[in-house]
Image (cartoon, rainbow, N blue to C red; front, side):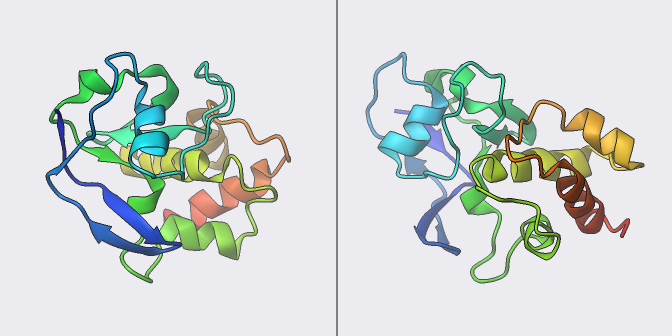
Length: 163
């Protein structure tokens, strides 16, 4: 069994407990990271949109890099740090980008929101927030079917300290 470091297992909404060294449950060697997170660990923030890596709803960070969790086999990540949207808040204190999504009203249905937030966190960490066009380019792998793109860019700008 692989050991997972650095994620927090959600107990209720924003309340989370750090589960460092938590062993993954036994799973089939063809289980995707998305299915492991959602079905085996109960971390349901990441969403199964297209299940083909085209929509970004399943976005998580693996060792700080953004990935579509529907495309990665969980067995390939032994020892890697997987960060999900559940791990961003610190107790009741939201991550700045989570708060910015609320402030900017950057979601409607909410289905893409976890993947968008994870991509936005990576975008900020990677330094791709110099302009609205740069943010749009670096977050282009995430589809919002409700059309909240302008507000999502504003939220990323707010969290990056540009607005």
